[in-house]
Image (cartoon, protein in one colour):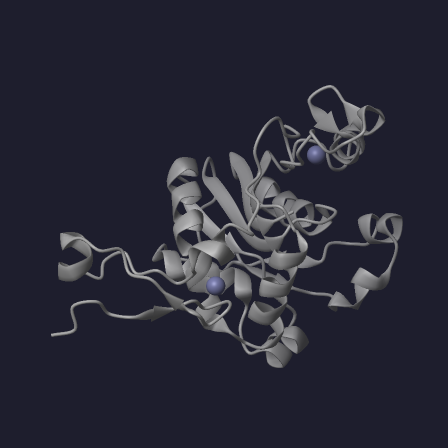
Length: 238
Ligand SMILES: [Zn+2]
Ligand SMILES: [Zn+2]
């Protein structure tokens, strides 16, 4: 019997020292995927944040803030076409250099296994939100072919919660090269396959990174138009 099963950190590949105790000996229920030094490089979002997008105010100049909103959200909410669509985004970590590197590996090298690192954080947040449907933001067909998997769907599937895949991309992601204004005013990027009844339901969108919030708001728009009572999102980083 292997008394102290050895785990290796998924990020730095160094051995993770096992916790010595009865629990560690008799069960592997709390497997570690990341070593404490690597884990300490992830910066959780703490303190006061923008009511909608979860942007931390601590690092934001007062002039980019409008009450409990950051200036970006304030602009979205001022726009008749976009206001009130995304109720709240929850981001787990700050998109620092370390996380950037981990996500890049996760995305481009197809390290599906890296999803395991984040699963506990993700599950805790999802438990807190308690939605009726969990909808991963889809990749375009080209992207999916390039990467082999959708990291948002991978994160969700690791939590064991069912994915409701009702969105599909209708435009190419090449749009991301366009400016913010161009992107915002483009027509819908997703289409909805209404295979579930969304009326009065609580929906959570899953994506990897919150940047401009444009993708999530496009998705939220369709879901709200189909009757969803609330649309929140959970992203790994922002
Ligand atoms: Zn490590
Ligand atoms: Zn905001």
